[in-house]
Image (cartoon, rainbow, N blue to C red; front, side, top):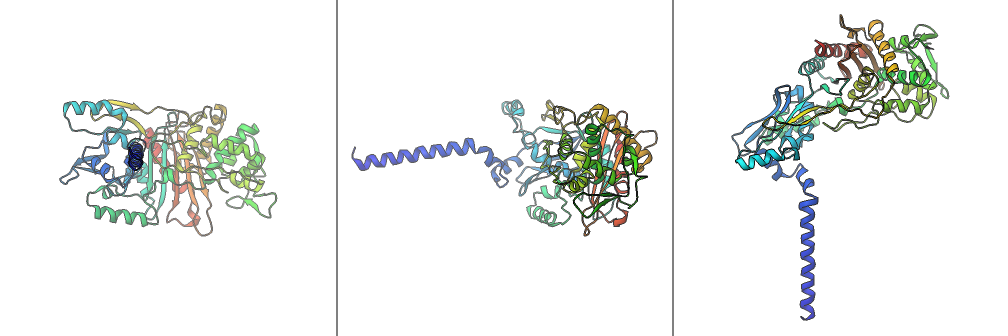
Length: 488
């Protein structure tokens, strides 16, 4: 073989090997990446050509597929509507998937390996393939109370709430407002879907945002539960321990002080820790923040879940944060849930749930069961803790529970009291800036002696006058209605 032919042959061989390597790379290593791309129309059209599984709350479908008379064969619809939109998300031809539609796509589309046997049976029997069903942990009565409570706050409101079963971590309710109608994004009228999506995307109130897990803000005085837990664990305190209750607290290294909300003392220069929680005393908890080391405070916050990613069933999840505070003044402000401390409603529900569960913080989850189209159970949610050790001891949890019950019976959380039921709670009002109104927070659990529900409510924005904004006033009635729904 002469040299030019040999050179050409070698070149062709190299190109052939390169082609085979690239083909292998694309079809094997990059297959999932291409399949998951929102702009992969082939995969999208295949998904519309078969029946997608249902998303269920109890026995009721809140997302389902119905036969369509156009070329796409199946139309995704949302009977759960706006109430469940932050959970279900949407499935759109042009804009992909969000919420449970996204996180459980492999099950709903029937492509999950757990459904391999079902796919094989469909193939052998020549049956139409169908996706699996996803059953959620949501309690419809609690969800109704959550949604109705948020919408009752009025127009132009940004708020969210979450409820957890303390012993298991099952999410009983998750609501966010403003919300949207996912069916308008799932429609096969792509022009109408595009118009709806653009309007929602441009809305300054961000209705596509699930504030329950995606909005992290200063938690204000609800964070005093974490500070109290650290004080009991690290300083050996209890509900009767004496703490500073003066009208203002000097902050070392600054020319400012930390005042109480009303500018007066909390009942004297020395008050009990229980009384400090009852009246949400800034000076008491600011002093505790300085008495504790910043490392101890951060470790306590992280033991409750701050800084962690703990929700796998839906996303994205904003991380709650307790940052490093270099200075006693910053430690004092952080101890009352200000400074750079931020938390999601889910995180503050987990703080209450951890106290309610004797110190063990359970990993929250939304997917209760996964079933095949023939209703065979192929996967089941399992309660697990977020860490290998409790966030606080059982003794500390009992002390905090008694203190939180006293906040409802004798303090700022009286609005959440339920006749004949022992309720534990804590209010919070977090300052933002002079330009915008404070954030209102409320967290609670009930029944205190055998808790079945822990709740957190966050009102980010409302039409309430600045002087009237308070966690108990805005969030308390919502939390009460949710707890009553769970224990009725």
